[in-house]
Structure formats: structure tokens, C-alpha cells
Length: 311
Image (cartoon, rainbow, N blue to C red; front, side):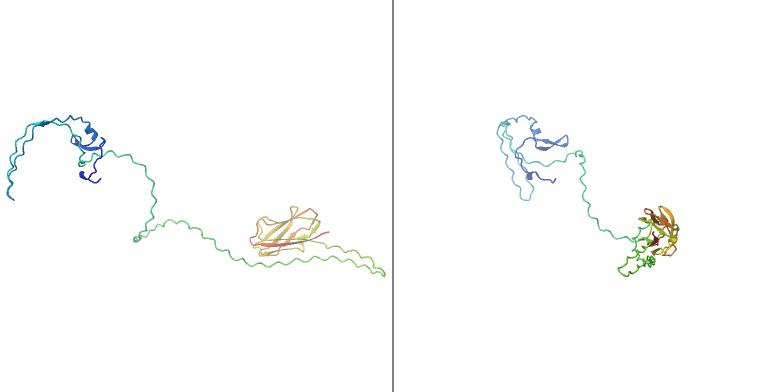
């Protein structure tokens, strides 16, 4: 608080007893109120004496300019004793406030208030310049620890598709049935038509299995609708692959769940060989071909043409 001279302070309007003043008590500065002063209960001032004030003695002559000050003139005689005190006049206006006394002792510190919310973080300062590189340490003979393995790189692009293998040869066409004999030409009206020759007797099971077989895959499963027969070693049949096998690969042929032989691809081969028994099939029997439990990785896109005969 800045110091202000008493004449520069604002004047009090009206006193109510709560105004604070400085006083000295037992050699220490204290704070009192106007009400405390008014409560001291001072007795009334005695009456002013009736005697007149004696005349002022004559002023001594002024000494020469620049000379020593002349002696002070003698004081006039003291007047008679003061007369009785007159009545107390009304209270005059409050005089200007005196200078502030020295500060009193500091009171105890108040309790610490709650912590205010944290301010938002300021923006990061600019990175300082890099310091100079220190000298290289002496070479160590102990190998340092191996650093962590880096992340696996992205998979490379898929390579171009290899060339398509050649298509295997088609199986032979089945024999044409015998034509019935032509009836004799009559001499008059047209004679009766001769009997119809027997129907063709072949029976063909054909299907295509795209892609690479998986272990124990059921390549074909068929329930017969009429009777037919298959010759030993599937004579006249063809099984070909568009992509050759890497190693020997065997397919199993089953009748009603039991093996009747095999279909085998030799290493690097695209045409299969057969080792089967001759079988006769009735309507309702099940014909099945299963892949190997250890399929070849390259053998794929297989065409099956199994030739049989029917009664």
C-alpha cells in the first residue's frame, strides 16, 4: 500500500465508533476504535477563570540587518488566575488523520486454498541444436547384444501363372451298334419292315475335377440308375491332368464303399494308368473315386472318362 500524507486523505463524513485509529500502548503500536476513545469517560473541563489576560510585552527593537539578533523583550506580567471553565462547545470537525504507524505483527498464515485446475500445456519449444559428437570410445572385444528383429516386410507380388499344360487325348468313340437287316422287297405291296438292330451297348462315366485335390477328397460319388459293367483295368478309359504330377499319385476306385482298384499318375505324368478288377453293377449301387491321403502338390485339373458296357 502506498503512503499517503494526512492532508491528502478524504475527510470523514460522520463517525459511528467503528473507525480504527493507531495508538501506542506500553511502547507498542496498537489499533483502537473511535468508540473506545469515547468510552474513556473523561470528566468535564473546569470553568475558565474570570481574570483578563495580561498585556503582551513590547517587542524588542530589530537589530541591524545581518547583525546578531537582539535580546528578546521582557515578558509582560502574568494575568490573574484563569476564570471558571465555560461550557463545553460542540465537537469540532475531525482533524485530518495522522500518519500511519508501524505495521503490527503478521497474523498466522491462513489455510492453503484448493489447487486450481491445471492450465493447458504450452506448445513445445523448438528443438535445440545437436551437440558435437563425442570422441569414439575404445574398441571392445565383447560383442554387444543383438538388436530386436525388425518387422516383417510386406509380401512380394504374386508371381506370374505358369504355362497351361497340354490337354490329354480323348478316349475312343464306342462301337456303333449293328444295323438290322433290310427286309426283302415284295413283288407287290411293300413288305414288312425288318426288326430294329440292337442298341449301342457302351456306358460312359465322365466328369472334370478342377484345381488341386486335397487329402482324401471324394473326387466323384455316383449312384447308378441302371445296370452296367466295367472291364478289368478300365480298358478303353482315359484319365488325364492338365498339370503334371511331381511324384507318383494314386486314386482309389470303390464300389459300395469297397476298393475295386486304383488310378495312378506316374511322376511328371499327365495320363493315368489303371489297375482294377472287372465288375458288374446293378441299379442303386454306388460308384466312388477318392484322392490320395498324401496328394501331389502340382497335379491338377483332372478329366475322368470311364468306359463301361450295359446289357
